[in-house]
Image (cartoon, rainbow, N blue to C red; front, top):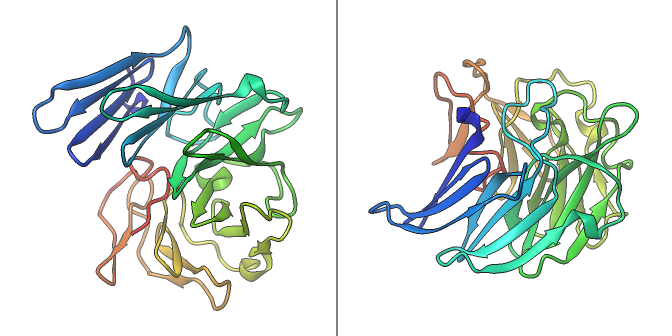
Length: 272
């Protein structure tokens, strides 16, 4: 298997490992297997998430990457929630139950409070178009399905963060490869706050792939953007270091390792 098809998550003594068509949940202290599961025929697993006592994962047909997007992606045929220690199914979202058309890939998944969501690209005549999906993390019920609109303009373009959708509290955020685009309450998608004009015309820093949030800022690589949409982005002055910037904020400082392809394990967008 290609190394990029292996995704690992560690949380509170549990090691979750996805290996394309198989997922395994282990005791991180001694390697004891709690449970495992095989994907359906010709399908694979991506985007494993450990949140409390629940393990979430997407299952579908592996999708072709967009441009130089490095992490594995699949069609959102299923999104599962399992009991972390026993593997007992809690719920399963089925794409076939929806009347939304043909999906190209689910680009990311993130759990925030009682929500799980991420960006989904849909097959069209031109480039795949970006959409957003948010489910109730407790039941799998659809909370939000957002088609492309003024808060998420344009096609997916290149890879990296261009189609990332992230959750913070009850807010949905859309990002492109350079900066935040817009945010809105998941229950009031029409009342969005646009950031497009705020950052329009500014020189784009190298801020690909990695998005993390603190209470007042979004960090994208070596740049920080205020959540209030007031003021200007803060650029650290750090240079590009290898594949993608793996910088992360901590202790009031911005740490930038000398060489780091940062697609994993920070894909969902961490809070620090």
